[in-house]
Image (cartoon, rainbow, N blue to C red; front, side):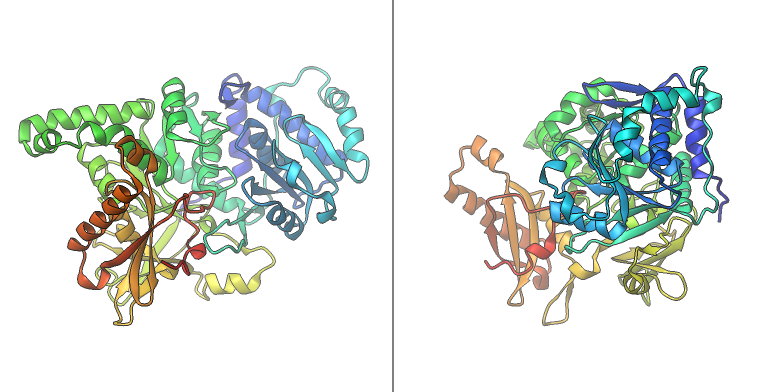
Length: 555
């Protein structure tokens, strides 16, 4: 296992070394340089100190991705308090519960969050601060108001002769096992647990990113995944800051339109994304250029095919800004046909497999080394096994252990014991296979696996991946009803309307898809019928469908 140093020291070192470089930008808004970031962190530290916050106390933050969110996070961890990121998409009752369960003393909120909250439902809070106005909203002790009223004076008293790089000094964590953050999983089962990640996990993940991605100071990153979830938090934010990168926050939903508009301006060096975003852009803007009889024919011809592939790669690269080293895709299964297409044209993508409980990285490989349908090799500092009599041919649960792992679930020893066994192996709940070289292939979630009365195991994600690539299908779910497989489909209504399809035409297209799909499936996993859904399936913040809401759907 590799040795690693202090996470807090990495942040301190990056701020000092990149003092005059741009650090954080709200897209089409203000920019903070690393020296500005340092000043704001010091002001937070003054607030914490004046309010009696101690290392180990909990500070919660709930907001869209923005520079102020990032400052709050960094100020908290460098003070050695425990940060509690709360997804702004959570309903008020969920936020109340998390604030209370985590025992947060202060809550920082962004635009649109506070309006739905009830301060009386969070009796343990000492204060609430508006991130945008940087002003108290609730102050139960009076200390927040006093401190904010004299903050510039307190800062000037602490640094009377100009704030300089040599003033940036944060006390490191006493132990790598010290608790750094509690991340409440949004999950697809409806139940949130507080994942306790120590500084050890943050450091190990950042070190791994540095070896795999190789950013240089001044390189740009777009933060479009919610930083309240560890995938975006690690790849876009924590690794980016430690590398001296310039992070842009879109501050809005990363729709294909926003991406096509902003990426050519920002020209990010590294992009992390959930599959849905990449799939939509490839399907809407790239595939239509070659998805015709001539394009398909050219792909089969040896010489002209290379020209066509190069052109398709150029178009795809430019759609994401044209300057990136690779796109890191994770958080949900990737469409198999889209992935095959990307690999065929030499598009630099890689699949990262992980979970909140590992902060998040379990497996990944550089795009040059990635194998089709694989999520790569186990990360440094991580052991990965397939719990199966024959892990090369019989799917089993993916289990792992190592430096990236959590300490456990906050105030929930029962759930911790159910997830981490007596030998220290974390049971992911995912089913997978391993090849002879150690590459891991995820088949699906164990809880999602469908077992028919004939004893056949069906992995719905594999069927959904095929169905989602068929005409007029935006997304789908495969469920088991009365021992028969049913496809729940949310159609691409925009595409159907553009092609003049009526409701009856659309239903006929879905039936044709069903018949065609069944021709490529074994008899035991064929679809008996379909049901059209008028709205997108409800999703978690990382864009995974909340399957539990649809398991009992009737068709």
